[in-house]
Image (tube, rainbow, N blue to C red; front, side, top):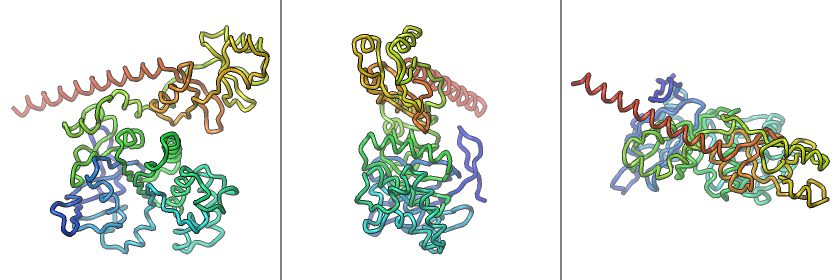
Length: 405
């Protein structure tokens, strides 16, 4: 196997992809699009390529599966130099998802997903089982979507189908070129969260291209910030890049608001949830008022018979209206799942009159809440950690200078 990858913030990790002195010079261009890049991509991680327009990030990604042929250098995949192998065979080992999805419009969703397995000679029973498995995995009911055509799906549904197709032959590596870039912001956040949840199960090695530093921070185990020519300005974990930008170029690219960006590093599952008073949708008004008086909150969260949030109901609504609980108060629209980031939670919180967001599990059942005060405390803690890391690094540099002197 290839050498291991190490960073200052991580333990040695087995490398899945190694780019060695890789370059691409397009005819008639004065400068290389990719200029002697060296990069180790660890197995089972999402590595983000991010940088300004024209820096070569998409070209670098396409070199990996040789949609663009390198001018020089080597690409090592699972210990094998794939620079000279048959490119079609190479691509069958690598899933590929693009911004516009790229589904075949005249094929059903099932046939789209089955494309590579059929090329590999799988039997139809195995293909059908795999198609249904993947549709369910990406949140598309097989019975509903198997025989539909791409034109019958929404943008978010087409993107899910594109991910399923990329996973069809269970490739060890996936390439994703701005996969959520053409989707509205609400759907984009939802798909990002769903994909991160899926990655916890599939643990693929993923190279992900984006121009959005916030998406990079949210999605990446590691981020490579690229200059022109795919020169690596900094390649490290999101935490390290936010805490210690390598130079002014990286700091400028990250931009202002580093504290808020750090909220993209913390998941809801990593913090303690706040219990809010709850009541069933069939509860009596007396029971709801008792739950409210027994807490320091301004409303009760009404849950249906499967413990899914329905409405926020305050004491005033309970006392002034005799309509069913499911029809009074405010809808509980501010909802996140445990794998969402605190940045996601904060965005949802801004919709809530009560300064909190409900956390639900995969079935939609209520687990607890996140309040604004919790988010504020996390920001302060992240700031303290960043200051302590900066001081420790400064002390190390000072000590090393003294030794060298």
